[in-house]
Length: 239
Image 1 (cartoon, helix red, strand yellow):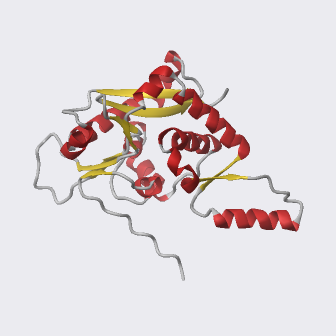
Image 2 (image 1 turned 60 degrees about the vertical axis):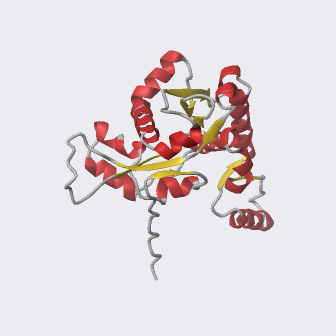
Image 3 (image 1 turned 90 degrees about the vertical axis):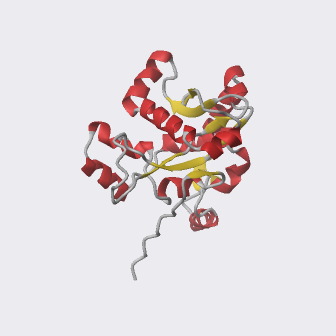
């Protein structure tokens, strides 16, 4: 029997705390800014292909995920990420130990000790930075926000609606700032400005502000009339 495709979860408009990252990204209905970026320079065919052919994560992406978790949700690190010991794969016992480790940590992101060390140093670079640490001192982290898109034409007679979604890294409680942590190979002003244009981070920033500012319960939860700023905290992924 072929494995049945899991049905994606539906969320009503609003904000949700505690939704696992994998459920938000791949297991929930809604269009994210990462998906919409395909339409900036590509086609609808590229968009549809990526929906059905997700790309495997790279080493840099895994290190970035680990660093994000250390910075924003350190209490969830052991539940979401496993650090693999070194196995002697030249022996049957070593191979068996590796298989057992993988089985015991099914569903977790597995990284090695060198990747863990790099992620730790990156997280410390952020958490010991005077401005970055102050911004992250009083925040609501990894909240998922869903809303129905309203087009500028005001047409409400369509047979369909598009659910939008964003998951900001951190929302200020003592300040009206949305924070996005980016790992990069060049955090200089010139270097990261190029990354913003190349990866369309400005599109994400605009969508995050729109999504959060139209969610009144979220604004009430954070104690703001509106979020007025969007700030990137950039940390380089090489020493």
